[in-house]
Image (tube, rainbow, N blue to C red; front, side, top):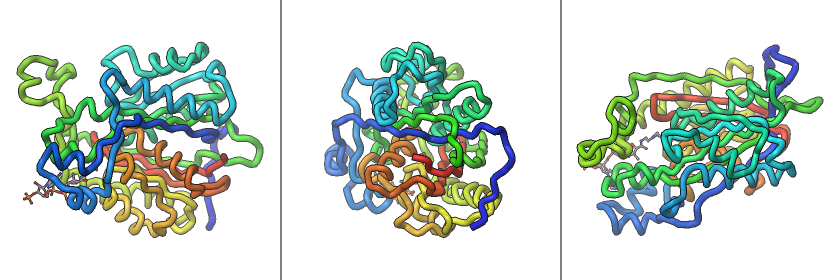
Length: 338
Ligand code: UT7
């Protein structure tokens, strides 16, 4: 392995803590069998999902985000008053405005933080991670909370078997801080967007183009609409393509990775990407069986799974990768410093 570190600012950013939260209520494949024409075998074989967690009425993304943030800060042993910025990646904000970040700031009690939301669907967390890292690397801030949170159940049509089996609710948070002497932290990233993919995965109404009306509700335009096969084909190709670009640029291969933490949209997409990159399966973090696709929540939730299962350790090279609505695509290379 010959990791090539690009010259950059003297300040490097690292992930110094992780936390996650999912609501307690479960929706299993057996439950879905009673709701739509589907079966456990189809869902498990085509997606890898067995169950997902869903919120009860009255719980929004800010609630999940705040719980994940509290776990993250408690693990680091610091008070929310030390947090200087909060970035929440979500496509299911509590409301159009104010930003979910404002609601989280109030819920966790972070009087010295500013913040904002970032909308990039399944790539929301890695995009927010880079924005947060830039705040640290510029020297502007020393403690930045980056959160991925989605209540997908709020925009899913539970009579549509093509989408209702996939998504779940959940949130994950990381704290970004400057590296200590000898640490490397976040190394490099490669992001892309391709807006020609917008028709393949979207929620058509409720924005400025098609404001909410009786007609949009009747036409079910406030739910997720997905051309599953089109997204699948793009994701399988793009996820490995961007990851390969990043690894090559940094002088390493998939075999050098201690851990691959991909977005959890479909187990087949994850395994195909891992195979193309040459990452052995034991180093791939997969928890889609337990959580489904929680959109911006998947990668930090999977980081938490990696920690819980002792499958990641200080010094490991870690690759993150995601593809989602937009289309958006993201991949991040980092050294784990916890
Ligand atoms: O994170 C955001 C990014 N999203 C993704 O990455 C999702 C990417 N796409 C996928 O993961 C897959 O395309 C799906 C899981 C959504 C669908 O799997 P597929 O293997 O592409 O299935 P399909 O859409 O090609 O449908 C195959 C058959 C169809 O029946 P016919 O036309 O062959 O008779 C569907 O009607 O499976 C049928 N089907 C189902 N059957 C049982 C579709 N949904 C279901 C279901 N249960 N829930």
